[in-house]
Length: 258
Ligand SMILES: Nc1ncnc2c1ncn2[C@@H]1O[C@H](COP(=O)(O)OP(=O)(O)OP(=O)(O)O)[C@@H](O)[C@H]1O
Image (cartoon, rainbow, N blue to C red; front, side):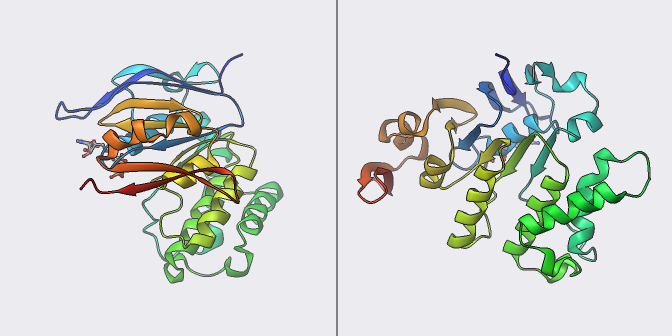
């Protein structure tokens, strides 16, 4: 069966000649969630940029249902792939509803205004992220966490089949982190998400891909890919794996080496 998303030996070299990603491969079935983890500077955001077709691989291919992303036009990719990035919008004068409506752009012809279906999709995305009450507020007046929810709503308004999220739990308190990840799991979409919290990644993702200095050092179900043996060298810390009695699942703790 064709994977929904496949990366075949993808490398990316920065304009100055620095190799940032080397030979990353991944096959993700439809509806599954893969977590991208690794230390600062490992290449997580760069890998996501290849997947939402912002960067072209220097080598290798990114395939969406078997088709090379770079053989498709940007607009048709945007109808299938949405990204929620760490950068927040800079147009603070727009309202929440207007920002979410931007997600409809790939589905519109030219400069046409949205019809009833667009309005329904936008309303549904606002509801789903519990933003309806603040739909007419300017984005500049929202907290960091509320703005993050607006960006997820904008991505949902795009009605993508594949959702890419770069550190979606940034700015969120613990309750909103858990809520955002529960919501993401519930969407039924194919999802690629970068996460710094390894225990959250293990609890949320079907599979994880651990990057270190641009290379994949472990890949697979969290229980086998995120172990003291893989994590300690990548993060240069001591790692212990315990079992949480109540949840009956592994839990990682981290310590500086003495
Ligand atoms: N356009 C570029 N030109 C030069 N170097 C780049 C470019 N883009 C990324 N890099 C470098 O590639 C490395 C990986 O960057 P990337 O942002 O993908 O890492 P990351 O794993 O997302 O890091 P973090 O956890 O800190 O967000 C970094 O050292 C970064 O400085």
